Image 1 (cartoon, rainbow, N blue to C red):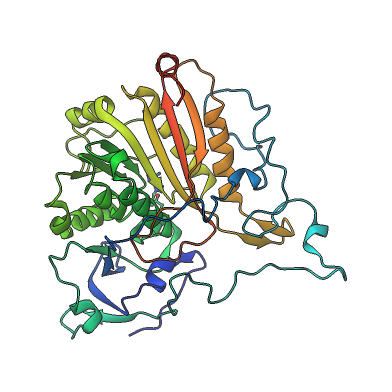
Image 2 (image 1 turned 135 degrees about the vertical axis):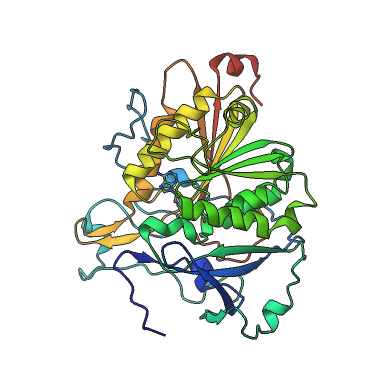
Length: 397
Ligand SMILES: C[S@@+](CC[C@H](N)C(=O)[O-])C[C@H]1O[C@@H](n2cnc3c(N)ncnc32)[C@H](O)[C@@H]1O
């Protein structure tokens, strides 16, 4: 086999790197010539509820504020007071991320780099390097143990080490964090109509459909959406025992409307658009903020859709703060995360009289149903949207 060359913008999700299955079945090449693998992820249905009081939820407001300089493209609003409370210079995760360079220097003036602890994996797993199997090759024991029809196994087609424009073809930790939240809060989603944005391989939508009634699983690009649809088909064994349905559709944040052209694959029917607006009460988005222009488009799309929904709705965002030391800043920074926080603040501060948005971090003290590293850089955010009249009518709980 030719040596694999990595482009400078090639990324590989830790989910695939650290997956407990040591072997990956390569099943085909996709439309752009990338090898496609099928991985089986175990669902730990017996996971136990964690006690939030034992491990206090992180206070995200302790983290340094995003500089609110960028315009997220949301309607005009007052920006005063946004994140004023966030003045800390060291996050609860121990990373010093803002303030002056002196904060990063030790007593002698050396750069004091805070590193993630080695081997601090809560699940006690060793790093595993995948062995690639081609179809027809002997599969080894750990894959054989997982039965095709086993409800505790979700099978996902994905690629590995993609360029940035294809990141949706991998599974990201944020998707598993969202899946954990769904599985540990089933009552919140039972029988709901749900919209997922930037669904990628569709793993979170599939998990959501084990609880919800209908999931509009959306992303952009024919190749990715086809992969997503195959994943829905691959997981019939999970979905059949539930009543949920996953509908894969295109929803491009850089467009102002839903594509309803019947000639276009993954376009919406008029009935689906109406159903979405009439019945959706939950939106989810996992690990979708990594490029500021796309984040702006995403927030414009969210604002447009949430403002047009008939019912109040709740949006859950999972995000992983990816920290980098940049020479430009001479500091550890996470611009994509800061821009996300800035857009969240803008949404919360909208005063257009049509909708009221609230914002809160969700403590991550719910159990893990999927196997991945729940690192400290993972966060979950809850945003609610309702009509001002509905707010007045609903007593505060
Ligand atoms: C890092 S991936 C996350 C995928 C999946 N949610 C997960 O966590 O595994 C970001 C996703 O955003 C999607 N995305 C990027 N630009 C988009 C756009 N303009 N419209 C809709 N989705 C977009 C990508 O295709 C990709 O699936």
